[in-house]
Amino acid sequence: MKAGSHLEKMFAAGHFAVTGELGPPRGADAGHIHEKAKYLKGIVESVNVTDNQTAVVRMASMAVCRLLLDMGIEPNLQMVCRDRNRLAIQADLLGASALGIKNVLCLSGDHQKFGDHPQAKNVFDIDSMQLIATCKKLRDEGKLINDHECEGVPQYFIGAAVNPFADPFDFRVTRLAKKIKAGVDFLQTQCIYNMEKFRTYIQQANDLGLTEKCYIMAGITPLKSVGMARYMQKFVPGLDVPEDYIERLKGVDKKKQGDEGIKIAIEQIQEVKEMKGIAGVHVMAIEWEERVEEIVSGAGLLPRPEVS
Amino acid sequence: MVVAESKPIEEILAMVADFDKILLTGCKGCVTVCNAGGQKEVGILASALKIARKKEGREIEIEEITLERQCDPEYIDQLEEPIAKNNYDAVLSMACSVGPQYIAKRYEDTLVYPCLNTTFIGGALEHGVWAEFCQACGSCGIHNFGALCPIARCAKSLLNGPCGGSAGGKCEISPETDCVWHLIYERMSRLGQLDKMANVVMFKDWTTSRDGGPRKIVREDLKQ
Image (tube, rainbow over all chains, first blue to last red):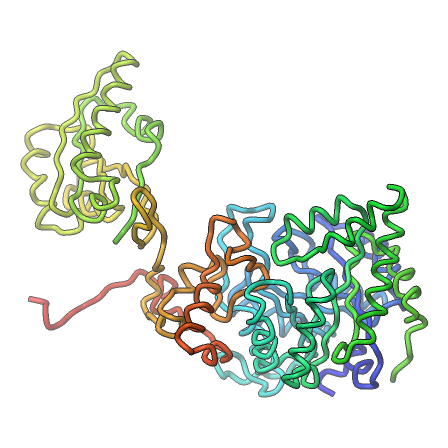
């Protein structure tokens, strides 16, 4: 065991793991967290807490992670390199460990151009690859980037994200391999819609033996409507939404499009579950936490197995 | 070269709103090459300011001079006579921001204003189009990236790109911006160096960059 988190134990026991996601509020209301998180409790192993996602200021990921722990929910602390330099990153990592946070997800971060403070100065002192290496060094060597020894060594189960649908496609598996080389334990993919392309990607990873070196979780985001599907297709860089899904949503009554989106998500989970090299799913139901149970249950993944 | 562009005329007019007589100084260095602050642009700006002020009913007297370079004390000295003789209300510089700082240092009692926004170290892509190529990090390692700079040309200065926002060779921040990591990938592929891209590039030392404080180069062999 590297950190002994619940998520890590689920993988270690050979279970197909499920994680969820929660976006903190644009304000100081802790009640908001309780309201959203209650839908995820017992339904997923652990919950990603986003870090100023899409470069919009929100309640601090670390604070929300602690609120989740108080609710008996295991958090995955997302951390981006956009907003902090190596001093702040390491300080936050040490603090997170002290607060009982065991899963960390290392990300570069969306450019602030997309966010609510486009006038901000970005940092990018280190990148996501180096952030993975930082966590590993802290955990395995008990040392900071500058080789200074820590008093009290933090334990993390180290995660990161991969996007099989960004370009150049041929480099994507190399980048996955780099993240493993840097020290990642588990990976969550970008939302998958183009299943054929995803199959090719995972096949490449299997061929290189990469899926045996870390746990890969397929990213699933249910489509709420034709409008959302179109938006993701046109405006989210590095996302690939095939026309088939949009046609399928169009084929049902507007009020039923959400239900159809849930159905698609369930089918996708069942499909990736059968793929060699996929160790779990990461369900990102954006502002739709109340439907996660239906998705996980529909995919035949409830109740969640117990591990000790 | 240092690439700069003119400030909006309204901003410059606001700077000189209280003045009746100014000296407008150009530079024959980088800003002449990038058509922002050479002799020609000095003439154009002077005319534009005069016309605007005439319209307002308060004419302004502008003398023009374009120095060999404004980043060299030797040429800044050439302003001594006109400044001493003419009692200007202010001196405006059309050099990169080094120029007005040199003038301010040399002429302590003179008000100095910049007319350009100094933008980046770069070059022309075509006539009338310039792009950034260098961020002056002070420790060049572009040979590790197919001789292309990810620090200046990647929106996130990633050393292990391309990130998940690279699509069709373009950066996530704009379809007008090339993804330099896509270019690096293509070039290293052509050079048979893709294996190098599989290595994790570790932490950059930023002490040689602006982060280490204002920089200075001392060449003992050249000092007198």
